[in-house]
Length: 249
Image 1: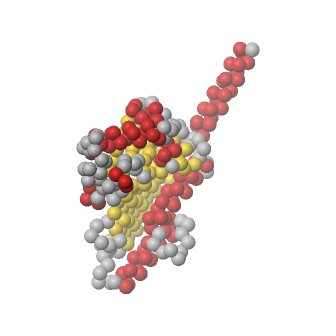
Image 2: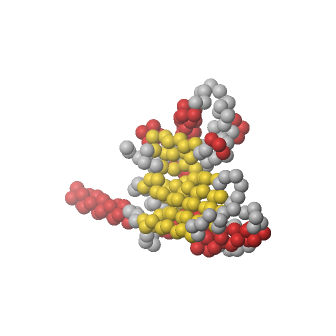
Image 3: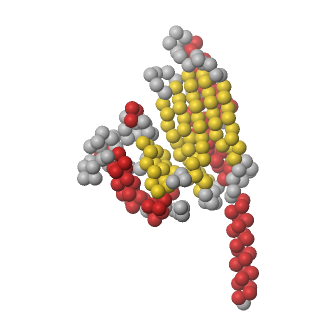
């Protein structure tokens, strides 16, 4: 009987090892650049492309393409389905603006850099930083964090990383106040922040990185443009108890 159990466990072990091997992802860096000039529509894209036809690879590539398309798409009348079409849409929108306001329009510029922030057996997090300048005094930079469940092969929301949301928020607020010099016994906006209803909330973008869970507050999210983005990193050793995907340092 024990011999049979041992054989069964060995089969289960190799089954899960095989599943784990299937989830090891290989990426190829893709770089696209167009129109390096002073007065034109300058475009530079750099992002990882997951190789293979697995469910998770397709989910990652689809999400990244959609992110790039959303940034570049300036013509609501066009149905854009590829990054190449989005680039053409951006250029066309600039040319249309330049033809109407030739003496006023300077060059447009977009830069998108996507990097793998974290990859583990169950989870992968990709950060997409974009800079967009389409006139005005300055451009706008933002970071969007994409999280993927490698086992299920789907994109998930940042809040799905968290099991105990109440405990996580409480700890995150304490760490935020310490980092930003906000007194523990005062309102969260007493130091100039702009949290809705004067109540702390998690960043719109959060995900795993090598040091822990990173909360990225983009410009205008809870502070002014001049303050720049606010990044809060919570070490795994302090927050594993609140997470769905535990990481041992």
